Image (cartoon, rainbow, N blue to C red):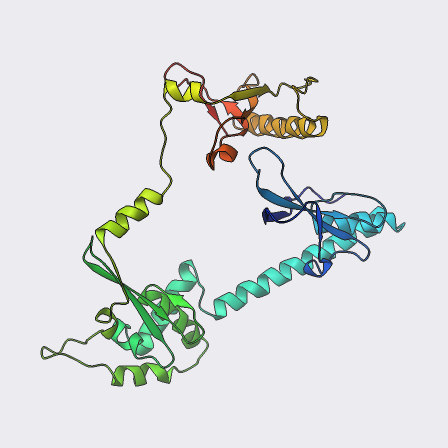
Length: 326
């Protein structure tokens, strides 16, 4: 069979939806005929509140996690030899690789470049038209700007939007985009037109109107409020250990005691723990490293889902207490 691949992920569970539910097969054009797409929601663990997608055949409830596996299994169900099934999988992978390459080329054509390609595009533009400034970009036909003044650093941040609505936060981004056109041998007459509309002050300095037309001002209070909304680091105290009900479920290999968990859920936890142990072993962790499933049963708030799941013991203790990492 084809090698294991990453699970098909869904998204955030919708409180108004009853899971499992079927999804339109049109969203998966390469899925074999007769197969169904089922979205389910995690009921516990670190992915609580998230959904996942599985594929079921016309034969049984397969619960396969990728289209690639569905293609292989469908061929087997229809009596095709394994060699032909693998050939169908290879054709699918080649098709997806070609699609990915085409998408990448399309992005590059639009100026979404990285590394040396980006530098080459910028240099090509500068060599033909010289460096761009904000005053020129402001007057490009069909473009608009949005300026935000930040009191805390006494600076104005300008975002430039082209006619298609794409945002550029720096002038080098704009030059990289235009540079892709230059490298394809295209002229950009809009540059000369925009420069002809630029106004200078009494000293000859080019006036960037975008920096004078402030759309929004961020005050110190605004920035402080934004900081307060960011995730804060919490240091555990002895009182916090007593404030919640923590269930630590050992995940030792071969354990048959489910500790009150449904057998199916416990089986999945053991499988996850075994995968964690294998990864830890590859990173030179001791074979005796403890792996546990932690669950806070009386912890209110949004952090309850994040503070449960499969953890492994760290080599050092914190404040004399065992320390675990998810």
